Image 1 (cartoon, rainbow, N blue to C red):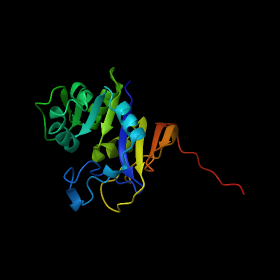
Image 2 (image 1 turned 90 degrees about the horizontal axis):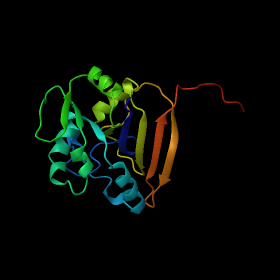
Image 3 (image 1 turned 30 degrees about the vertical axis):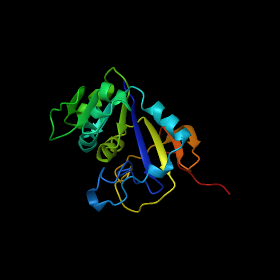
Length: 197
C-alpha cells in the first residue's frame, strides 16, 4: 500500500494559495501570490532538496496545469517531477503531452491507487484534492511549512469537511526566517477528556 504525503506551504491562518508567484493562482481576486519569496534560507533549501527526490505525484487538475506548463522546461532544477508518474484527478482532462501522466476520475480511483504497489504519493498544491483526501481520511503524512504571516483570505489547507484525526510530530525545524517546518504522521483517533487542575 502506498502512503499519501501532503506537502504544503501555509500561513499562520492556513492559507496555501499561490505561494510561489504573483500569477500562480489569482482566483478569488487573490493579491498575495509569491508570499513565500522572502523567507528562504540554507536550511529551507536543504529540506526542499530532500522533498524533491524521486516520487510519484497525486495532483489536482489546476495544479497539474500549472506544473505541466512549467516543469518540463525546468528539468535541471527538479528532474524527479518529470520522471515520476503524475496521477491527476480530473473530470475534464484525459491526456497530456507531459510524460508519465495518468488521469483518475474519482475517489474510488484514488483509493485503488493507494492500495496498489509502487512509490509513495506526494501531493503538492491541489487544495480541492487535499480537502477530498482529508474528508476521507486518506492522508498518511503532512509535511508543512508554516510561515509567520497572516493573509486573511485565500485557499486554505483545511476546510470544514476534514475528518477529525490525530497526527504525531515526527520531525521539526525552525528556519532563520521563522518558518516552522513540521512533519506529522497519522496517529489514530482524537482523544478527549477533562483538563484536571
